[in-house]
Image 1 (cartoon, rainbow, N blue to C red):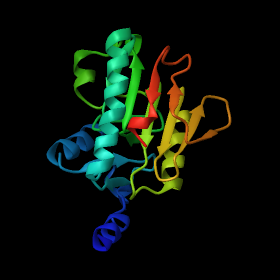
Image 2 (image 1 turned 90 degrees about the horizontal axis):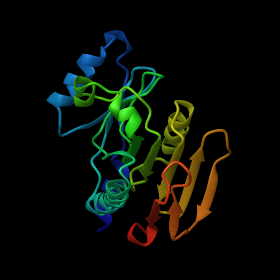
Image 3 (image 1 turned 30 degrees about the vertical axis):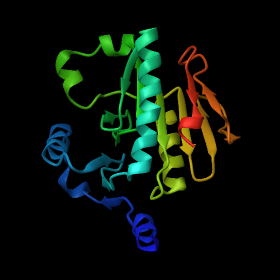
Image 4 (image 1 turned 135 degrees about the vertical axis):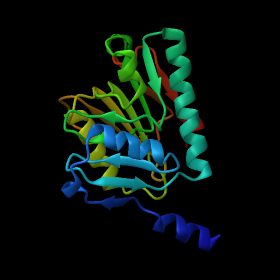
Length: 200
């Protein structure tokens, strides 16, 4: 068991400087398409980020999050839900893939069929990041702030290790909750409640 724990903590994201290549949107899309086994992002500076796959427990918890969000959206029919494999190009040119995301129907309806097939060139209105054992808390916090700076209205950073939730909102300080049992989608996701007993 010690060997497994040590290996888990050693597997971190790899960042590769690709500034000299000036990779286009289409080229980055093709890189991701040709390497589907890899979880790839690109930061605003153009660096390629290769992230390790999640372990079984994190994958299970992430599925529980996405399932709850999808079920609420299926009933409310207010928007579109995306899983962790969906890529978003943010206004600052970073490509990110949150663990769960949501946009209102109006945004989705304004996209062409071709735009829906590739990375979405927009910031989700709502995102969730679930911290895995290999994730740096600082890196995740920076990413959460990046989403907010680029137009995301509400974001939840779920830190299972410390049983804490960090709530990011437009124009407000980050709110930290200790071991809450539920989270409200507020006015962004009306009547949505995330049950955290399935996540902790």
